[in-house]
Length: 52
Image (cartoon, rainbow, N blue to C red):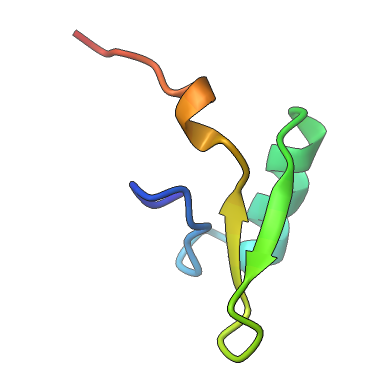
């Protein structure tokens, strides 16, 4: 996943594989921009961790 919550096309086996794994973890995936078919994790900010 990119910093803005967008799924990363370079993820192994593509966006669909990343989408499946994130949904299995309970995340909601939303589609934006019909033309470019971009997918984002809804409210991703709520799942971020501070790695300090």
